[in-house]
Image (tube, rainbow, N blue to C red; front, side, top):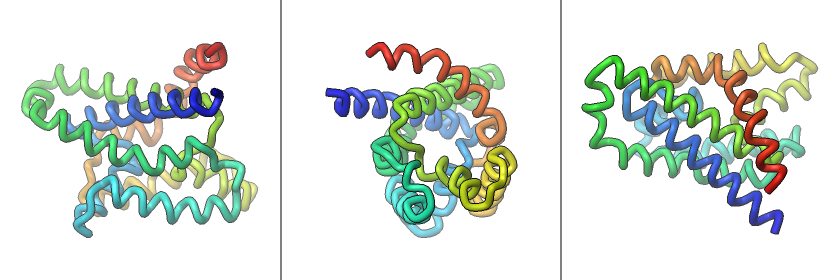
Length: 202
């Protein structure tokens, strides 16, 4: 029963994250750094985002498995296989709305607020189950475990490198990407303080 509950909660979180990311992508406001990089790189090798992201996640997972097995859990596996597919699916659904989403500054601002809010809320929901980090999110803690360095500068450096790669690869970098890279932490903490007590009661 607990396993089924965790699966449902994680799926709700991943779907919410993906809707938020897809809104940002469709409104041409950028997406989170990791997705932006994968969209850019996948376009050069002729693969869909979902397939390419699974490949990259598998490569990252090998590193995390070797040096930080405790970071891997059910949430890790579901995240690595489903988020790319969910973003592809919702982006296709929202594509007819591209013109209306990008037509005015007011609409784009609303898309930015809604997209970031949903992306961070979804992250908080799936992480509140304590069932493992996404492969990308596990990189910084693993490096810290190996080197003894503090988390914030390692994660910031990681995100900056990924944003640069995404930009050079032609990925959808925008204001949403910058906010995701540097401002999502406090928002995820805010949502976590709300959703974690609710999830514990379920």
